[in-house]
Picture 1 (spheres, each protein chain N blue to C red):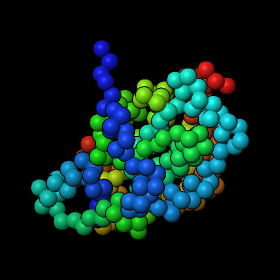
Picture 2 (cartoon, chains in turn blue, red):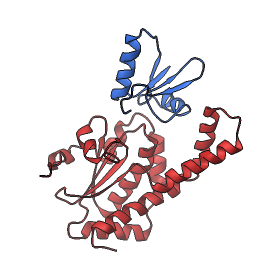
Picture 3 (cartoon, helix red, strand yellow):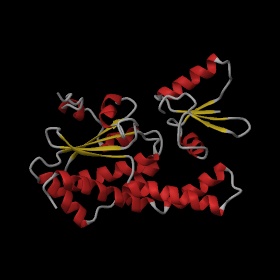
Picture 4 (tube, one colour):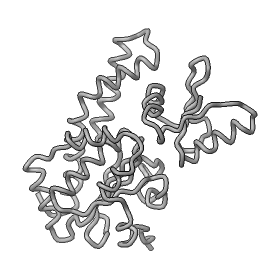
Length: 66
Length: 195
């Protein structure tokens, strides 16, 4: 699962990187639905964020300011 | 030579009024409304901002950069709105991510696009000062509460810690809003010849 923001350059880059690597993902844009925003805040404050299947949270691996 | 600001009279006028902004927010509408209620100015604060608006080269306009998904914006924006309303100052709101040219004029420590940014301008858009993100006391409170929670809940998961952190911070929010007002006043006193 990835949590993103629609107009965020780091979010766009993360999706591009995942597609390039052939990694499948489900995306929740936190600026479009309250429940997704509330859900993302339980994992961290910084978007984009990857929540792995094992529960591990990875915050903005792109290096681009989020 | 100083580069002219991208915030011209026309650009400023193109920002959202508070009413228009609230009509289009997609998330956190309830938080904005709750924090508007809790963002109260004292009579002394009101008197101060009225003086600050009437002063020579005083506050004529307030610009806020923010995004509706950001918790700091839900607390800070209503403070700016209260100030504008109390002193009869024109206020406009600009979403950060579609106004990065404005954001670049106010980067936190010259590097970070922290929001909210609340900019106080004269009527002809000379910047008086600007305030960023949250009051200093909020950073200290957050660090102290997190440390305490880690002691209280040594085996808790990060999610459980974050949930407890949010619950304990909630009680601090009205104080943080008051501190935001105090910090803004302090900045303005330093720039305007008022008490």
